[in-house]
Amino acid sequence: MRVKLGIFVKYLFETSLFLYIICIVLDLIKTGFVSNVFDLNILLAVVLVSGVLSALLGYEEVTQIGKPTITDSNWYFIIGISCIGAVVIFIKTMYLGNISYFITGATFIISILLSYLVLIDDSE
Image 1 (cartoon, rainbow, N blue to C red):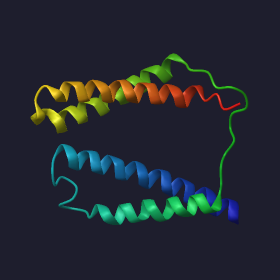
Image 2: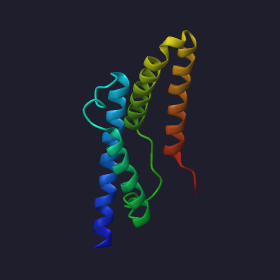
Image 3: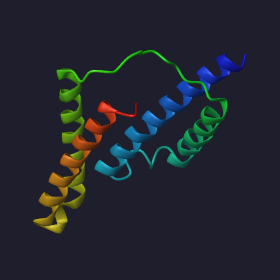
Image 4: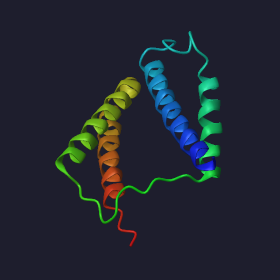
Protein backbone atom coordinates (compact mmCIF):
# COMPACT_ATOMS: atom_id res chain seq x y z
CA MET A 1 0.00 0.00 0.00
CA ARG A 2 2.82 2.40 0.88
CA VAL A 3 4.56 1.76 -2.46
CA LYS A 4 1.38 2.48 -4.43
CA LEU A 5 0.79 5.66 -2.44
CA GLY A 6 4.41 6.66 -3.04
CA ILE A 7 4.02 6.14 -6.78
CA PHE A 8 0.79 8.17 -6.83
CA VAL A 9 2.28 11.04 -4.83
CA LYS A 10 5.42 11.06 -6.97
CA TYR A 11 3.42 11.36 -10.19
CA LEU A 12 1.10 13.94 -8.61
CA PHE A 13 4.14 16.02 -7.66
CA GLU A 14 5.73 15.75 -11.10
CA THR A 15 2.51 16.60 -12.92
CA SER A 16 1.52 19.49 -10.67
CA LEU A 17 5.05 20.96 -10.78
CA PHE A 18 5.10 20.77 -14.58
CA LEU A 19 1.67 22.40 -14.79
CA TYR A 20 2.70 25.10 -12.31
CA ILE A 21 5.85 25.95 -14.29
CA ILE A 22 3.86 26.14 -17.55
CA CYS A 23 1.27 28.41 -15.92
CA ILE A 24 3.94 30.68 -14.44
CA VAL A 25 5.71 30.99 -17.81
CA LEU A 26 2.43 31.78 -19.56
CA ASP A 27 1.60 34.36 -16.91
CA LEU A 28 5.07 35.91 -17.25
CA ILE A 29 4.78 36.18 -21.02
CA LYS A 30 1.27 37.64 -20.94
CA THR A 31 0.39 39.15 -17.58
CA GLY A 32 -2.91 37.92 -16.21
CA PHE A 33 -3.35 35.17 -18.80
CA VAL A 34 -3.63 32.48 -16.12
CA SER A 35 -3.85 34.43 -12.87
CA ASN A 36 -7.07 36.22 -13.87
CA VAL A 37 -8.80 32.86 -14.32
CA PHE A 38 -7.14 30.58 -11.75
CA ASP A 39 -5.37 31.26 -8.46
CA LEU A 40 -1.86 29.85 -8.86
CA ASN A 41 -1.38 29.69 -5.09
CA ILE A 42 -3.74 26.70 -4.99
CA LEU A 43 -1.56 24.86 -7.47
CA LEU A 44 1.55 25.91 -5.56
CA ALA A 45 0.06 24.43 -2.38
CA VAL A 46 -0.56 21.14 -4.21
CA VAL A 47 3.04 21.17 -5.45
CA LEU A 48 4.42 21.82 -1.96
CA VAL A 49 2.27 19.23 -0.17
CA SER A 50 2.87 16.53 -2.76
CA GLY A 51 6.60 17.33 -2.77
CA VAL A 52 6.85 16.96 0.99
CA LEU A 53 4.85 13.73 0.93
CA SER A 54 6.96 12.41 -1.92
CA ALA A 55 10.11 13.10 0.07
CA LEU A 56 8.68 11.53 3.21
CA LEU A 57 7.44 8.39 1.49
CA GLY A 58 10.81 7.98 -0.19
CA TYR A 59 9.70 6.13 -3.32
CA GLU A 60 12.40 6.13 -5.98
CA GLU A 61 12.67 4.11 -9.16
CA VAL A 62 16.00 2.63 -10.15
CA THR A 63 15.87 2.10 -13.87
CA GLN A 64 19.43 2.42 -15.11
CA ILE A 65 22.46 0.46 -14.02
CA GLY A 66 25.87 1.65 -15.06
CA LYS A 67 27.21 4.97 -16.19
CA PRO A 68 24.88 7.03 -18.39
CA THR A 69 26.15 8.28 -21.72
CA ILE A 70 25.45 11.68 -23.22
CA THR A 71 23.84 11.29 -26.63
CA ASP A 72 23.17 13.81 -29.38
CA SER A 73 19.51 13.97 -28.42
CA ASN A 74 20.56 14.99 -24.90
CA TRP A 75 22.55 17.89 -26.32
CA TYR A 76 19.69 18.97 -28.61
CA PHE A 77 17.30 18.94 -25.67
CA ILE A 78 19.70 20.88 -23.42
CA ILE A 79 20.37 23.52 -26.07
CA GLY A 80 16.65 23.83 -26.89
CA ILE A 81 15.62 24.29 -23.28
CA SER A 82 18.49 26.73 -22.73
CA CYS A 83 17.36 28.76 -25.75
CA ILE A 84 13.80 28.91 -24.44
CA GLY A 85 15.06 30.03 -21.03
CA ALA A 86 17.32 32.65 -22.63
CA VAL A 87 14.44 34.04 -24.69
CA VAL A 88 12.23 34.33 -21.60
CA ILE A 89 15.05 36.08 -19.71
CA PHE A 90 15.64 38.44 -22.64
CA ILE A 91 11.94 39.32 -22.87
CA LYS A 92 11.85 40.12 -19.17
CA THR A 93 15.10 42.14 -19.13
CA MET A 94 15.07 43.93 -22.48
CA TYR A 95 14.08 47.24 -20.84
CA LEU A 96 17.53 47.29 -19.15
CA GLY A 97 19.26 48.02 -22.45
CA ASN A 98 22.51 46.44 -23.60
CA ILE A 99 23.10 44.61 -20.31
CA SER A 100 20.16 42.34 -21.15
CA TYR A 101 22.26 40.76 -23.92
CA PHE A 102 24.95 39.89 -21.38
CA ILE A 103 22.38 38.51 -18.92
CA THR A 104 20.77 36.43 -21.67
CA GLY A 105 24.09 35.00 -22.84
CA ALA A 106 25.19 34.23 -19.29
CA THR A 107 21.89 32.47 -18.61
CA PHE A 108 22.25 30.38 -21.76
CA ILE A 109 25.84 29.34 -20.98
CA ILE A 110 25.22 28.64 -17.29
CA SER A 111 22.18 26.47 -18.03
CA ILE A 112 24.16 24.42 -20.56
CA LEU A 113 27.08 23.98 -18.16
CA LEU A 114 24.85 22.98 -15.24
CA SER A 115 23.00 20.48 -17.43
CA TYR A 116 26.32 18.98 -18.50
CA LEU A 117 27.43 18.67 -14.87
CA VAL A 118 24.20 16.89 -13.99
CA LEU A 119 24.59 14.47 -16.89
CA ILE A 120 28.20 13.47 -16.22
CA ASP A 121 27.63 12.93 -12.43
CA ASP A 122 31.05 11.59 -11.35
CA SER A 123 29.98 10.82 -7.80
CA GLU A 124 31.65 7.40 -7.74
